[in-house]
Image (cartoon, rainbow, N blue to C red):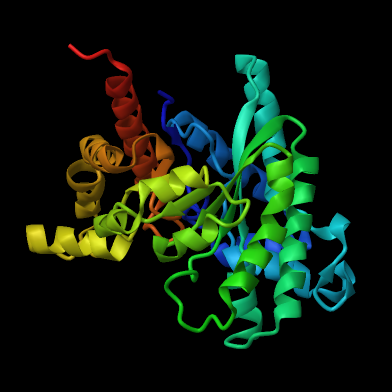
Length: 348
């Protein structure tokens, strides 16, 4: 029985005094590299320190914008939207390589990393809206393949364990005009290279409604937001997953910060946005290691060893501060580790 591996969604709140707009500008202009690199490396180190088994590069920029800005820049392309592979770079991967090098020197082990990239469907919706230009959809999928190829080039001192496509619109957005076969084709183009390299290919969905469609692609890990929506578990058929050799990345801690604060406000009769000390209740009373462990136990009783990864539901970009976000990651790590320890323990 394999241990369930703890990965994270990627995004984090910026430290106090630094805005996401500053990070975006600094990454584009490259005129404050020392400050930017320090920010990213420190966050990445903390992910490792709080117990994330396979950390994602820290994301302080808009997921879609980070990739679309490169694709839309004519200087980076042969023709509109047709990216030159050498320009399909994720700056954060170059930044974290130094941390990975130190990690190997200290532990003697190569750090495994998760790389998250905006998926072709969400990139398309942001660019073209509710249309069905299949050729353009295909071009964006090829662009993503270029980002993935360059990610492997950047991985000098770490190993890419997981490439994840962020596709929250699939299964919840009725503006998608493409046929199922178009979607399968685009996801196949975007994911084939990573699978050839031996990495797991994940798709991050909010809802698993379209999971059977994903099972027709090279994508072998489906991630969805189980912690906030436990009923999603009933949508999955373990046999379908087994027949396509598809695994699950299960969201086991809630990240919907407004919903969590709403529970705190109702429970304690406060406004936690103003009385900020009450925000700690999210990680001391609600999203505790015990809660995480119980969610895993429930899901494991249904899906068993189809669950390969566990994580928070989504990214933490819009949490109130970094300390609260890292505490959630730490609680998630403890809950997953406790579940693994009990699962591996022989029956009495």
